[in-house]
Amino acid sequence: MVSHYLKSCNAQGPASAPIFVPLSSSDHHVELNMRTQSKHARYALTALANEMSNKHKITEIAATKNFKVIVLYDVDKVSENNQRLIKWIIDSSSDACKIIMTCQDGPNLLDSITSRCKLISISVPNTREVVEVLTHISKRESFDLPASLAYTIATRSAHNMREAILALEACRANSYPFVDGQAIPLGWDGVLEELAAEILEDPSPKRLFLVRGKLQKLLVESVPPKLVLQKLVELFLKGIHANIKRDVYYWHAYYDKRLPAGASALLKLEEFIAKFMSIHRKSLAADS
Image 1: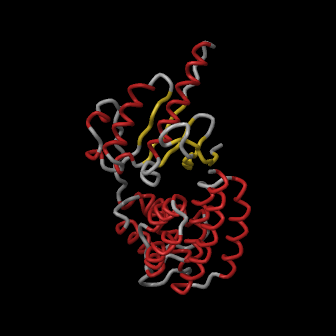
Image 2: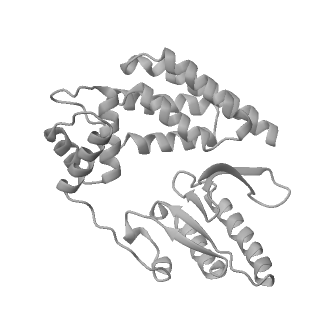
Image 3: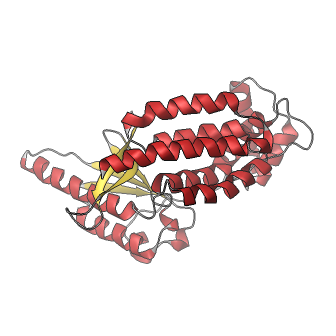
């Protein structure tokens, strides 16, 4: 079972204020998104490697094997310094933990990393395969998906399976039954991931002002407001302490009932984010 929590780590040393980085984990692995957590990922990664190395020393004494896997997403999107840190961890902690890295652009990885890894290349699905998956989803979810729309989504998503599935989700939430000339929002999930990471890292009035433009762009591109709200809440819940999750659930339900359709939902979404920022800011202040 995968759970989500905040990892506490120090940026400079024991005397510095703690930094909290959202992680996902199970008994056998830990997940860290290197792109959305680019500012603090190096501290969390160092803390994880040290923690696993210390546990490994204990299990060595007990003559047992207890490996844990670190899964790093979007490694090709991070700086060379962070990639060098990954290379150092591979060299120094390979006996204590194993690392799985995902990326889209292999050439963006340092040679010092690729030379230490077993590379597995996954080919992009063709149009027919993407259409088959979208059709299968529509049958499982009991809604009608025209073949022409499935084909359009497959081609416009550049055969990115995840992108195509998310586009289908947004299309259905925006307008169903589907219509001719159906708007197909693409890339909205990545925008919300970055948006949520920025808000969690900096819940300030200045950040709220900067958020407005991104929200407005999503709404203009026909991403349903309720879907924006739902996805933001899912992302926020992964990056906060358990003691404020009940408040987030409450305000999600409150604004979900009051959210108008279309671009007019911008003000209500801003209100929700401002409310969340206030709750999150107080929680961070209590930790410092």
